[in-house]
Length: 349
Image 1: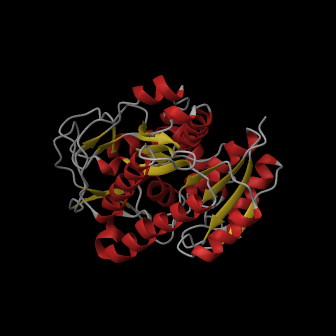
Image 2: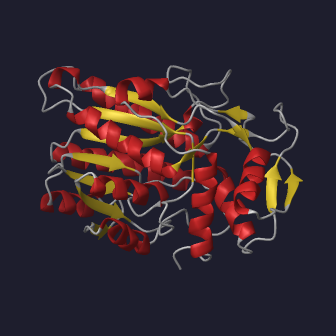
């Protein structure tokens, strides 16, 4: 058990809500700030049902400095987990200004308020998109960084800001140095085994698994597979799919690592959170059908701009330094996705 209090920005979202469950079950007190632009308050009510614990919630935008400072005034935070951000690759190509404003500017405001209140332990939600189109797989943390779309570029810019912030603290006498864990997610899928919380995207899903699940439940007529001419085993894109609960537990391991650091070893470090295995789109469709007994109708369409052929992690650094590894397999991902979608055909609505 712990008596530490964690601020979770974007905590009503897909990954945020699952992380809230793990934090509460581990004995943390949590405070959630979310503007509910791509999330529902119902998710947090269900987090409370799952854990039988209370979530303190503020509906606020992280770009609103006064609102954020007011929250910091009312609570003593030991650390921040920062999920809040827009996250659709395609949409980012259409609305780059919205993505830079929300993701980069929002993070700057959050960091300024954290500095004002001397809260310098941060877990940042980054993405494997910062590796761009990798020259080889599996991907290690020391690979060159680049991005092929505005969403990925916002994550890359924020990472650079965090590294600069961490370095600046090593010059001159300052308050407690920043201690930052950057978590580069691969492809989160699945849902809590209770079927109470899961991925509930606005409109047509951008990600594969909610799309498959919505076809299975009859909400969408068929799956569009973007490209069948990639240099992969079956021509469809290969990704590293990670169960969202395993991903959520990675945030707890990152927090433990931050809290165990001595002042002279506080730093900014990036970690891959993935399984280390690559599955193609057709692998995922076939696995879903095998586990659920439901056939998924699909069609091949043109490739999407910004998509790459193959992307999967080398997660060995997270295993070595965070003592983290995944527990859930492909069947768990499929079973839990379908449990969520079949119990909630209209999401949280």
